[in-house]
Length: 178
Image 1 (cartoon, rainbow, N blue to C red):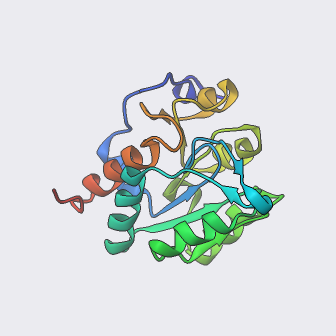
Image 2: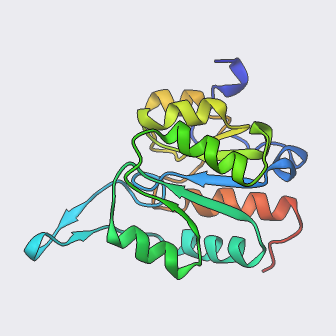
């Protein structure tokens, strides 16, 4: 791990030129798109909380034609529903080998590692973060992930971290309108 990969929460975003190179963003779910908490309701129903700011950024990214994929170790109907709201077609749940899915996504979208950004929050995300050209973490990611990240958001998972990243990626392309 190089010194350039050691970042604190709220570290400075990468230069615009580096952001412009990114063609695919891969997001974990629990701890990135959500705050990591899972609630169980009557009858075993599972609930998760998603932030509307992240949702707006996802909608804008999809509308701009930017590729976003979701990869999660867990399966959740709430995740399927949330991703469907934004027209995300690359939704991979129940994944035990995230690196294998990363490689498949990279090949399918014909991206080099340098053209892939990945945001994760926990140890299971490290292999992918170490391969991606731009490793991202929410502010409340575990210490090992924050150290591995090129950029650590000012915001926690499920609290605007995805919005901050997508806004920067789209602004770098001139695709973020007020």
